[in-house]
Figure 1 (cartoon, one colour):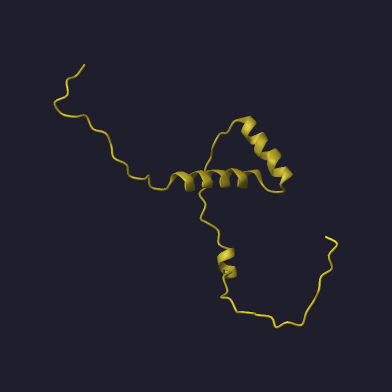
Figure 2 (cartoon, one colour):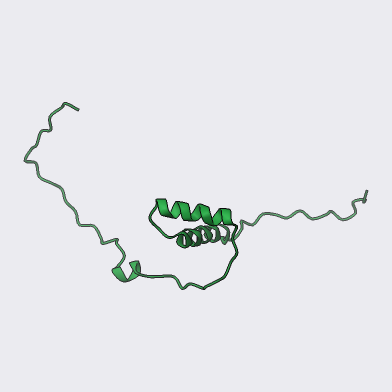
Length: 93
């Protein structure tokens, strides 16, 4: 990286792009929450508390994000695939 940068007086091609950032009110949006009581293993809670401390966040928020990610992954409709049905006239063994 010993090469020197050479600057020129060439014309700059600039173009205006559409604003793609969401407005502040969308950034402040909070999804409606439902309070629940759940019993977790001591090992799990200690893990999340430890990780939350490392990342300067709250352990309950981490658990909530984990559950939300699980739901987003498995809430998608399954791809339709043909189901196998027993053929009629087949002898039972």
